[in-house]
Image (cartoon, rainbow over all chains, first blue to last red; front, side, top):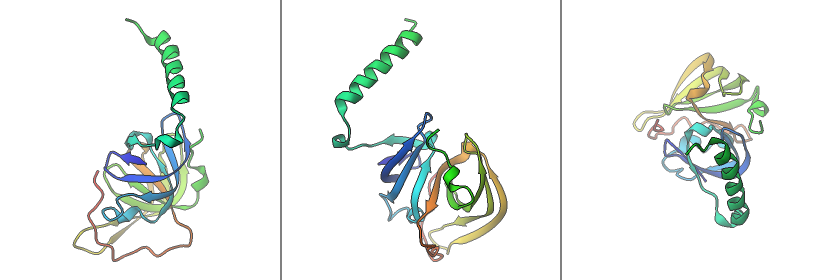
Length: 85
Length: 91
């Protein structure tokens, strides 16, 4: 599920993501469709990274060990370059 | 850049802007920062107490900073519900 800064929550299949964290979702369903029926006509959508408040991923779809390792490595490489303390 | 908008070029799309407006038009062009060019654009204004108001805009350029969501309507050319009465999207 992707929650936007304007309080709209969209859920769907993650198709792609880019470096700006723009997200493309397929088969979207508006979670609060009673409140925001204007968007129910959409099937696929592109969400700009700058309007995302957060992205929820069910834990069973995520390999948390791999994610933690990747985050640690990313922190090591960027921390080594940018860390001035 | 995996998440480009090119597959929707020349298609009718729905754009939600950062101030909560909904604009529908044919995507004539776009660039990496999501500046959009829409042909035959019109804005659908929803309101809790009035019927949906359609404002024709013709050729429109929207700066990418102001784009929140770009969407493709479902297949099957469905009827836009002109009688929908609801609160507008928040900014």
